[in-house]
Image 1 (cartoon, rainbow, N blue to C red):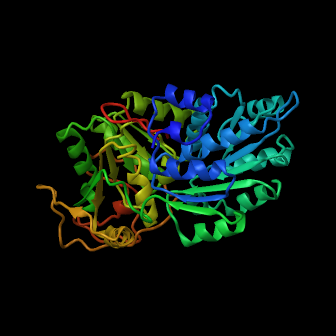
Image 2 (image 1 turned 180 degrees about the vertical axis):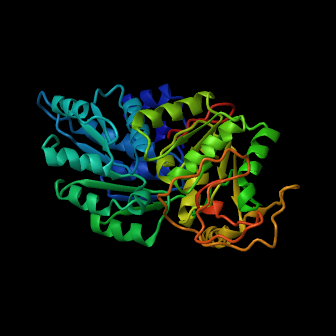
Image 3 (image 1 turned 120 degrees about the vertical axis):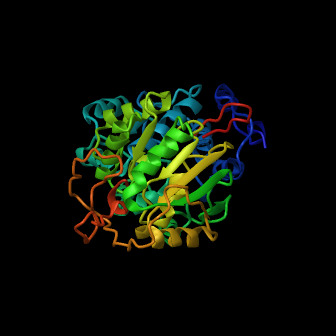
Length: 440
């Protein structure tokens, strides 16, 4: 369906055309009419399907239909997101869509100075896009009034629950008027999401454009079994031998991301890491360098990667499988977005076989397994427990195949020390080209 058939205003259609969009995605086709009618909405769609436009466009039109009077606008719409990167991405999209409506949007997140945000809010804004923690900071300081909010959007709600934001969300709810429209968008539809929706939404219309927890159809998925000590060597080999020019690599921990990035640099591959311990300026710089091609490999944790909007990202590598199976869906959803083909590789050592089984159980199918010649796993190596968290620093070891140990135990002398790199280390997109571009 064309956007022009969805009942959107001339100003919004003009802004959409400026972005090169004509055809609405399935989530947009279903969500936009419901939101325009004022329904609360519970929407599930895999990443890269255009959820942002699905709530932003009708939200803006409803604001346009009921203009407010006065010199200083009140906050009329609040969009809560889990990460800084997603806040910036959603805020940029709303500014693009509202360019002919003259609404003021504030993007609020931590990791940067709060004073410029306070100045922006004091001048008056119509729309706030925020992460829960920094939003509460403003509420506690009295620099933000949410009593006039007409629309609340919870974007990537499943990730906010995973990150423990439920208590912050409940605190924010107390500051909102009871009479409002609430839209909950999520990449996955878990029991927890349904429970949250029952508490926040009023007789919601439910949308699910893809089967629960499915991965993008255009993403080719493959598992490469490999010994834990040879993951880095195999990763470097694949990038070099296949001449991959843009690769997003996932680790489970922040220290793991730093370590893998350093080792890749030593192997001659320009790399950077992005995670929650990095300043916002460093994260933004790393992402921009990756998008521009200055950085060939970006190594990320799950939290930092949510909201990364990288045009036509060709390759995602799971250096380590995630502890939570749903995170696998989010990870590989960074590629194969908006109608583009994608390639997702998982390097799986013996420690991670249970994690792989959990992922395949979630997906309801087995992922193709290919052993790469020269990297066949040693069947005599026994699995070690995976530690879910570790704050230990990584040893400084520059050898290509070496990596820090995080196993619960070590065996060995005589070079047979068994360390668990599977625990720690060594582990929206606008499409161009010949395909129809889609709104994010």
